[in-house]
Length: 242
Image 1 (cartoon, rainbow, N blue to C red):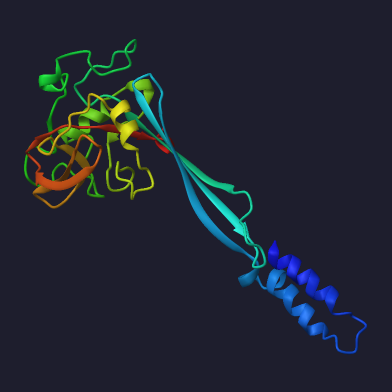
Image 2 (tube, rainbow, N blue to C red):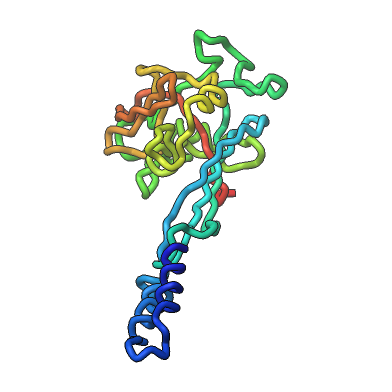
């Protein structure tokens, strides 16, 4: 707004009837602020992210893309406009754990020594491409890990292995960052540790697939392993997959 006020002061200080007045100068200011499409509109994009414990065995992640705009003569951006919104659901419990609705936890079976019944699955029964889809993802009909999510019927949704690279990370440099305190609250029974691994959705090569560990603070560390190895599985569902 400061630029606009300066422009008004400038124009009024130069009497249009004055012989020294140059109309091209006033026109130039107007063109700079409102005329040229390159200078008229400036935008910036921000993301609003939110994790919500639905207290029904699912964690909802919502990402909103907000676009703010201003013209060249304004200091501050206008109120943002919602450009798009996406939602991803996560099973609160790892495959094998049993959700307790009254307590809203995953301690329905086992104990802390076995991560409350969490099960491990192979990415494939052989170290080759036989368990991959055309896109290189774990095939839900041939990959034991992917099949465990595919057979999941929670709330009638279609579930798949959590895709770390494309959809989610617990690290702050990613858009869908889950703060440490929320991670500990929402995923309190999640197997954690440097030697505790989960399968990612993606294959790395004919023999290997990606895996990741999650430490006590929610930081992800990625690696790869033979497809016949067994690791834990987290299932997710994207809103547009219903």
